[in-house]
Length: 128
Image (tube, rainbow, N blue to C red):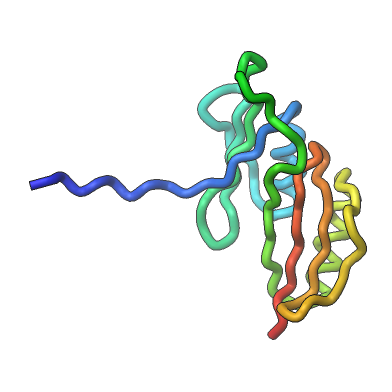
């Protein structure tokens, strides 16, 4: 009989030139404390709702270089437009750049930003 596989841990991974700075950015945005990871250039943050955000500096010898804006992290914010605007203002004050102005969509209000390393960050306040 086959042995059951262990339950995997789910995480989202971001490559960064300065992983410690990006970990501090997301720590402030998420209200979480960055934790040291598996190596000096690796950081982990618990995500609201479960899972982890892992931020690291990949080896420069990789055959395919990392690229900016290839991953978009979505933060679902309870609390409607006020929560979205508060989180957006905090992220902008920490070095994020607006990608598009906030807008109302059929599913809720959203705002797209670029984090300090150029990764996409979607702030979403779902409609009630």
